[in-house]
Length: 96
Image 1: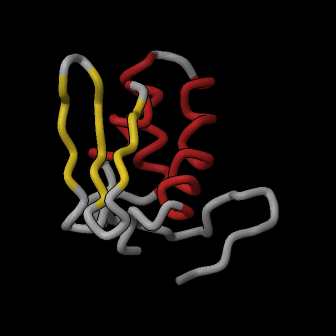
Image 2: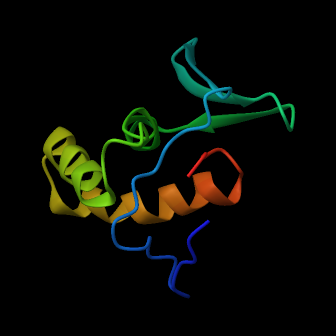
Image 3: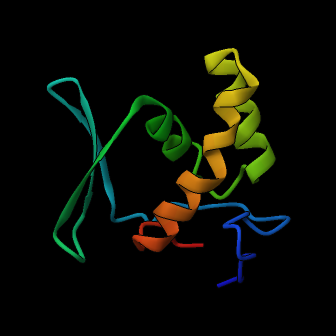
């Protein structure tokens, strides 16, 4: 696993990839992740759900940020990408 800087900025060239066993579903209007290893459910807001669906290992952080900015129409929306990815990584939800 690649180290990050102290401000939780993802490393250059990071292509986040969701663990294949983590289940992502919309249930009763809420976006949920289920981690079978830890038996934990994570509730996501819309921007975190959008970030999650881009964790395919094919998009780097910049591409994910561009997708979020395009979806929400503001540059400020992109500011949430790095902290959200770091949270996914800290929770053990990412394969890489």
